[in-house]
Length: 126
Image 1 (cartoon, rainbow, N blue to C red):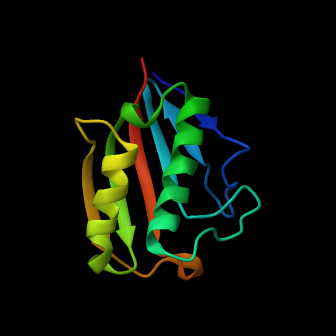
Image 2 (cartoon, rainbow, N blue to C red):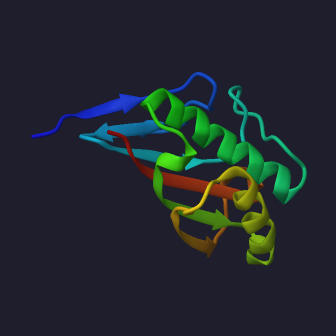
């Protein structure tokens, strides 16, 4: 039986509620939803593209602490304030991720702090 182990990066915003930045369960890491915040929990970027880059930077930092990287991600759940920005999301992902890209679900929702994007991820590390 696997034990749930917390994973946290000081370079990504800390949890603000009853959750952990990420949890390791065996060889699988579950990263909680990341907003475009810096480590001091301040919103970063005044465009959807800048906010997307910050979110993936946060996820990369957490992946690194877990022993992986963006290429270790198997699945992304992406929440956009405006689905019209999906082309911007695709552009940023092509620049930041290598093929094969992670599986992805993208939905339009209201996001805390009036942010443009929130992303959670599942990755596998050996």
